[in-house]
Length: 266
Image (tube, rainbow, N blue to C red; front, side, top):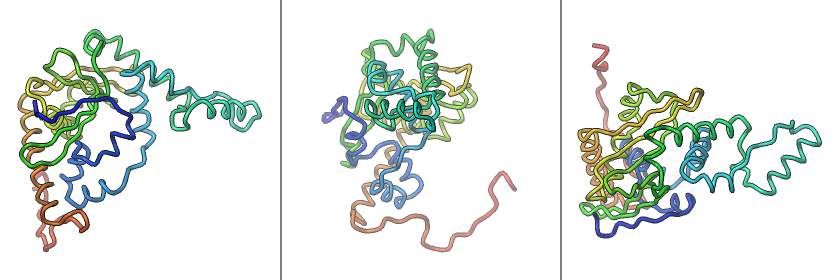
């Protein structure tokens, strides 16, 4: 375990405010240094899909917090006197972004019940530390890093990540591991730990019948992710040393680039 690793629970606002190398930041850097520089300087407004995903995480991992802080919107029309009164009452008790449409609220609850009732996922999540913020310094580059761990079991050998998806089948999830950079996420999240070497994904579909699967990334996938993280952190360090934080960072090639047909088109 890295000496300066700190594990603690904190609100999302405080976590996101910490300017450190996260998996999402490394995803931007993989596009180009300019993308990373822009992402660090501009916060991204949550989309409806992101909001639903957050609600699913809270409902599943922090059920008491979900019942306390999230609400099911009124079914009454907002154009009627009764509907306006019901909406006003909810807004007095809950933040606007935590009042879900009735269908969305019911979907989140159904997904939560599906995960917690699953014969593997339910016991796997029972008694784990949830929504744990991890902070550490990469020893090779000195870059300060962070991760938000969904599930930190007491058995000390794995990390658990909860995913909502349109397709939780093995074939789709194997593709998603690459397309969405889950292999890199695994390498990044596991890097500060010495005894935790397994990365388990609990994936649940967002539509009935809310099919789901539990998947463990292979050692090969995790190693590739770790190697990519190391290369990206080195690039991050080089950009800081070469350009500082007050100057623009490079995007793509500044020279003319010759383009050929993609391999699949030849």
